View 1: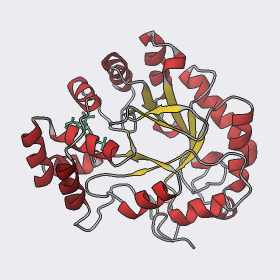
View 2 (view 1 turned 120 degrees about the vertical axis):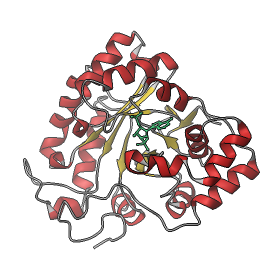
View 3 (view 1 turned 90 degrees about the vertical axis):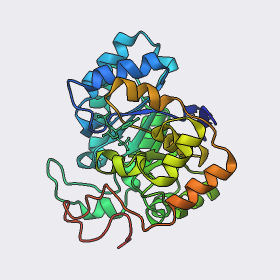
View 4 (view 1 turned 90 degrees about the horizontal axis):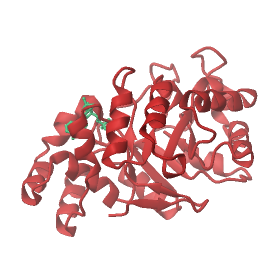
Length: 299
Ligand code: A2P
């Protein structure tokens, strides 16, 4: 299985990262320390996870050199106004205690008005002004690559219809056994866009159902690996980056060891995962009062 993927910039991004969403302050630092000792070189975070200082401290104290590491963060919805983008990045850089990010993502295709959770309809309908600021950050050397997250195909096309200087390097989306999104994955491959799988084990809400899925259990027993390793390996074999989250040291280590699944077993798992109605864990459309489904609709 690939240990890295090459982005349009030429940078090589490690295929397995430690995800730190829902890793609380007080436990995230130890998880990062364990991960770096286990060999991870990719940490996937975000400003809104409210743990960047502790992540930064653990990175600093690990002694792993910055050049060896891949650090991703994300621009929160309240900072989409062009004049707010750079200071939002600067805040993440300061908290992470680093000079640059390897990857900076627009966290959602949704903009909030400053200091509120009220949707800014104009900037939401047209993320290009926000994107142009992200392009500037690349020019300034503060971020090496930029991308998007939670964009459906129509939203990506809406963005890339503009004369972009820098194309989105990735789209980070929910991908799991219960929500495998085969159409989005096929489209991304056809269009040379790398996907990153968040909540790859189904997040805390569905992890049990994922690990206990019969297809996963059978393959794990057959190969003598754990159910989590089956699923994480499957993600990379599908051609995506995978971002498993854990704050349990033994699981952090377990999740880093992936194995190429024999083709027939891979196909069995792909068929099982895509043969039930998709079950999505993350969808804030209602709670944000969007009036549409951010994943399904394009108003
Ligand atoms: P914890 O962090 O307490 O170890 P996802 O990566 O899909 O978001 O899933 C994260 C959830 O899965 C967390 O509840 C995490 O628990 C749990 N988890 C992570 N790795 C494993 C593993 N190898 N085996 C069992 N549960 C795991």
